[in-house]
Length: 271
Ligand code: OAD
Image (cartoon, rainbow, N blue to C red):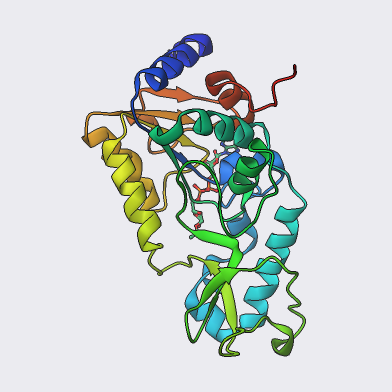
C-alpha cells in the first residue's frame, strides 16, 4: 500500500530542502493544465498525427508546407495558453534557489520562459530566455527558426503563413527556407543544453521529474544519472512511468496542484 499523500509531500519537501543541487526535468504533462496537448495518452498529439509524417527531417524535405502548417497551428495554440500554477510554482522556487537548481525541459512551448518572465515582472521574450537559472530547452523551441542552408538560428514569433511554399518564412541572410527550431526524430539534441543537463543530473542530490512519460531518450536518461551518483528522484505525474519504481517519492496527481504543495505557490505575495 502506498503511504498517504501528506506523508509523501513531507518526504518530497524534506529531500528538496536537504539537497544542495536540484535538477528539475519536465515534460508535456506540466503544460497539460494550460491546455497544451501531451504527446501520448488518450488525447495525445501522436494519436492524431504520425510522428514520421510531421516531426522528421525527411517529412520536412518531402512536404515543408505541411510540416510548417502543423507547427504554425501548435504555435497559435500555445500562444493562446498561459503558464499554469505548476509553471509558476517552479519559476518562483527556482529563482529562490539561486545558483543551486536548473530546469531542463523537453517542452518546446515556451511556457517555462513565460513563467520565468512573469515571475520577474518582465515581458517574456520567446525564443530566448532571461530566466535567473539555467533553463535548458532540450528539444528546442517553437519560437526559434533555423536556416536549412546556412544554419543561422534566431528567435521567430511572427505568424507563419503556411498556405503555400512561397509564403513560408525564409532566411534574412541567404533566402533559403527556414525550419522550426525544434528537435525532430533522428536528430541530435542541442549540444550545450544537453551537456549542461547531464552535468546537472550527475551533480544533483535530487532530480524532480514532472509530467513526462520518461520514454524518450536521451532526456529520459537524466534521472538515472542522478540515481547513479547516489541521489534521489521525486516524480510528479498522475500516472505511473518507467521511473516510478526507482523514485524515492512518487506524487500521483496533476502538477499544478502538487508542485504548489511541495514548492509553495508561484503567486505574487500581497502586502
Ligand atoms: P508524453 O506525452 O509522452 O507524456 C506526458 C506525461 O505527462 C504522461 O506521463 C502523463 O501521465 C503526464 N501528465 C498528464 N497530465 C499531467 C498533469 N496535469 N500533471 C503532470 N503530469 C501529467 O510527453 P513527454 O514525456 O514530454 O519529443 O514526451 C517526450 C517527448 O516525446 C516530447 O518532447 C516529444 C515527444 O515525441 C519530440 O518531439 C522530439
